[in-house]
Image (cartoon, rainbow, N blue to C red; front, side, top):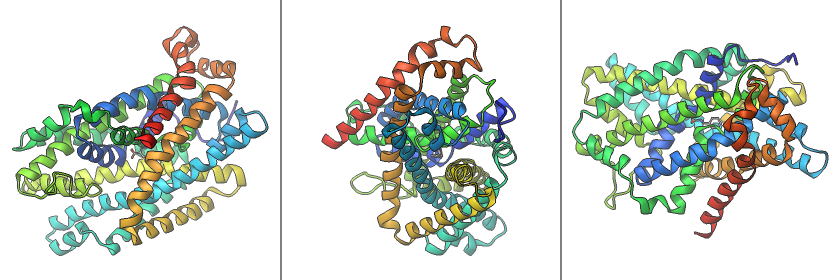
Length: 450
Ligand code: PHE
């Protein structure tokens, strides 16, 4: 089927773009912070288990539905459902997904704005403008709102260029640079005093903690957030993949890249916390809990960079620059969700859709900033902890029960004629039908009862 829609031009391009969506603040800010406040290794363990056993199959559900329908999530779910209640429920799921994607972007843009501010702060101190650097790194409404807006404008400008020019080109170049920087920083932090305490916390699990409902639901949210699941992002990216590609393989590559980067970031952030603690920075309260989760990395990483002398300023610039870019390759994938829907459903031009929706999201971010203490954590918990897994549950149900098995097989055969002989076909269809929904339900039941 010749599609008038954008398509990724190469396999590398898709993997980089989907990995670009997956890898972002979730990996470097979300996962390590959660790991730090949930007992380190216990969290790592549960996160890894859930990422492979749940998030990967759920990612495949979205990719397959997306490529099959060549449409946004709402239309994809509508297309595969029989008329009636199931179709209405599918459409509702898609619409809720695009609202959640927009809400995620509204807090994401705030944190991404901090990344840009810290990046510019490094530049400012390089040229001796210390008071500017001070302003850029202090928590204040004016700084927060300016950089949130800047980040939104960047996201909007890229998305208005469309898939190929906008998304693919950026992701291909910057993802590898980020990986190299991260590895180098991990190598460096591990040589410092105090780092080994962080390593211990990260690697020696307290198995009792691993069973706590609070930890499990946090890890579930982290896995779904980190792989961009439940909101239709991956479904849309799937809709831009060419029919020649082998989906389970591509999905596996994206999962591996994403999880590896999160785990790697843990090797940076947890040791850096203990290095900062060793250097007298206050990281923990008297009862041993973290001082502030949201801004943890903005305390401990600058402290780490300050141990490097003048080189630290350059490293700080590079790190926060790459983080801003990583956030951008994720934010564009969030904004694409409501935008693709509006264009395809209402025939609005891409430019107009992007600016109107982007404007609404920036307004929401401003409201969050005005009520930071009440709203910031609430929006994060509502979207990532509850909405993403529950929407992921719906995608698994639709891919497992509603999507016709023969059509599914045909879809998979396109990029892999021998798919029936492979393990994926033997396991995944029933797994996504039964096991995934049951695990998600069990985790929610445990949280409600626990
Ligand atoms: N996966 C992204 C990250 O880790 C966040 C994201 C969530 C992107 C949902 C798109 C949709 O930063």
